[in-house]
Structures are given as structure tokens and as C-alpha cells.
Amino acid sequence: MPLPILVVNGPNLNMLGAREPSIYGKISLPEIEERLQLKAKALGVEVECFQSNEEGVLVTRLQEAVSNASGVIINAGAYTHTSVAILDALSLLTQPIIEVHLSNIYRRESFRHKSYVSMIARGIICGFGADGYVMALEAMKGLQTA
Ligand code: CA2
Image 1 (cartoon, rainbow, N blue to C red):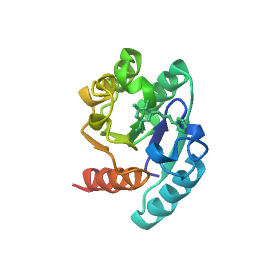
Image 2 (image 1 turned 90 degrees about the vertical axis):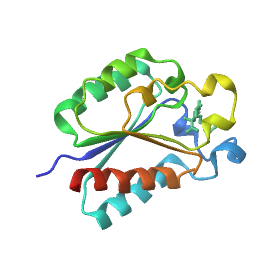
Image 3 (image 1 turned 135 degrees about the horizontal axis):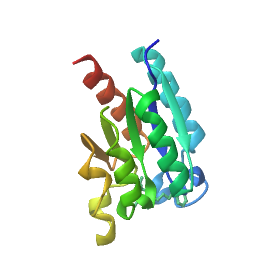
Image 4 (image 1 turned 120 degrees about the horizontal axis):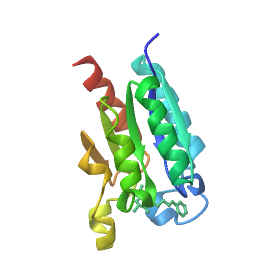
């Protein structure tokens, strides 16, 4: 049985759809996860979704991914710009890592231009809203079949 692709979402992304639709869109996280499951079925891959608001919980899940995921798609939320701990956990992985952001972080405040995740990610998709997660899944499938 092939290992699932892990989709990790960080702090506040559980609030999607409820506030700030002009920046992050109207879609909720469960709706994004449903879209990903449909796409996964079409691509013939397994997807497992995980969200936490806590840095240590995210680090622990990424450590587990070393042995139970075939790749990681991650939107670390605000921890993208601050967390060396998440960078270190991602560095344990030999599987491909794809970074996703709903918004184009490079069109926003300068503190969002720094990404620790980008230092380890194979690629980054940002600015396409929820479609970015689906694009990342397609890219991951491409990497795994290449
Ligand atoms: O654009 C993205 O996906 C971000 O990762 C979202 C993070 C932000 O800190 C990053 O700079 C870029 C914030 C997620 C907050 O999500 C909310 C959703 C609804 C209402 C309020 C916040």
C-alpha cells in the first residue's frame, strides 16, 4: 500500500471562510480538504490532511511523516515566516515538500516575504487561493511518477 501524501495546514487556517474573504477567499478548510480528496481519487493517490494551531504539534506530525508519508504539502500559515523548528522538522524528510499559500506572500507586508519553508521546499505555489492546494497535489503526483 503506497504511503499517503500529507497535507499540513498551520495556525488560523481552520478559520478560513469565516473571516477575511478578500485575502483568503470564501472556501473553508473542510471544503479544501474535500476538493483534495476528490482530486486524489482522480489521480490515484492517497491524501491525509492535518491542521494544528500549535507549533509543537505540527513539528511532531512532520516527524511522524518521515516514516508514514510519501510527500508533504504544507501551508505553515504565519509559522512560515518565523519557525526554525518547523524548518528543522521538514529537514528530516527525504520525501518531496511543496509549500502552498493562498495569498501571494510577495505582494504583502515585507515580513511575509521571508519563508523558512521555502529553504527546504522543492517548490512553492502561492496566490491562487484554494486552487493552489490542488495544483500542489498534481505537482506532487508528477514528482512521484517521474
Ligand atoms: O496566504 C497564506 O496561505 C498564508 O499562509 C496565510 C497565513 C499568513 O500568516 C501567511 O502569511 C500567508 C494566515 C492564515 C490565517 O488564516 C485566516 C483565515 C481566516 C481568517 C483569518 C485568518
